[in-house]
Image 1: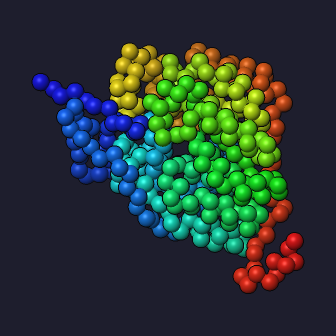
Image 2: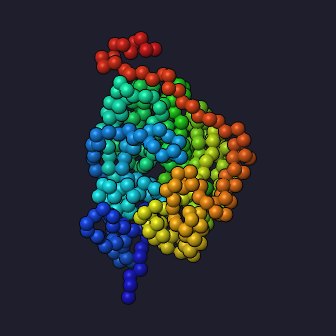
Image 3: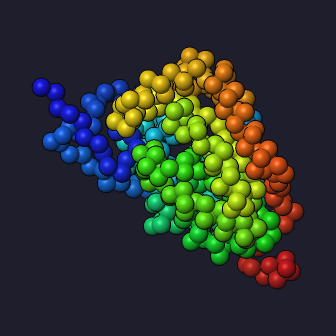
Length: 354
């Protein structure tokens, strides 16, 4: 008789697919009812040679990204960054959430980059891949140190996060905001706490995120709230509600895009659906495939984030209604670049920089 599977508490992924680049294949270690599995997170120090990444994708709205961590403890089941864990020799499933690479030299690498003679000042976005304010940031404080470097150089910076840990760094954020050097993109996928716990088990609650929107707004920090990703039959009915809540707290703009499951993410997400919403599994996957021309995701620029077909059009209309009603005059964020300076090695010339 087959053993029943047991839910792995505190994790989004419920399986560990084999690494597509590995010569060996490992059996699924999802526990049965009488088995156990280690869910403790491991932290590995890594020392990359570069830290600032040039972004060439034309539909993501950034020129450079910086990720102090590889892997993410938040456990978002659908996360587009999961397949990148395979390049490090790990599974995009559970490993992505419990084996986190810590780029200890990130602040030094950023400082070296900004000191280059040919550096052209453009905003650098933290978390283009994995969240810079995921739980391990409490211990390692790499994001805080990076913000100190941005402040030191008076360099514009953007942040994408699902966590309210940025509140710890309000002392630095407020200084950057006073010079119009920072903007925040905050993801609020759902207002329903039960859905959030299932979908994104280690992210901050929606209530805490909305409080953060208000706090950042009070400091004149531009906040773009993203109802993303929208998942058919899971949170597609919440677009207007999230937009209204964000608007009331002072968000400056609002965006949304549909989920796309590339590579191993399809298997990871389907396994999650089986354990959390088995009655909706077929509906979710069928509607998702209707959005992406029969597949669960698209890599075509300009289409991959909004999808195609009747259901995608319905979501686009919801977004348009939400923006027209709650964000009729969205603010365009333009962070300053003219304040950039390179602090002198000895510090004496800083007296003349004001």
